[in-house]
Figure (spheres, rainbow, N blue to C red):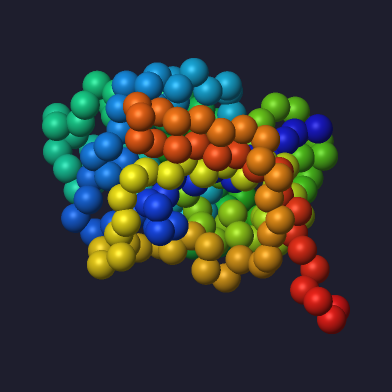
Length: 197
């Protein structure tokens, strides 16, 4: 049976991105990047918007010049390109251009439930705020990991991650600090039933 990890990179105020800021808010450091390179093999799950964004980065289309990417950023994109990926979308058309990507048009919750029951290894969301919310609400998430960067993006923040989430109890199973400033926290989630239901 596969395990499902929801994995987010956020500002302190829970935003997944912010207008005018570079990737990782420009605060990635050698410890954090080294840890990223040590992660186990994983099948990444994503929605159409995340697919468009990351496949565009991989094709050299993004808010920055591909020649300006650091070696670590380029390496991260290369590793992501090699990894197996599943994108859930009714709007994308085949063939998909990003290597090692499979398109699933069926409902994501049922498809992921089947992937967990019939597979092995680690499944992990990447970005995909709405997909992650749906999988968590359905009780499919085994681990919930957040890497918090030390910025508050109150004026420019976008993609507020936790809006629309159910109430969730979190049991901490891991934590770590990278480069003296980036905090990782990992939890085992339990979706709570609203009172009165």
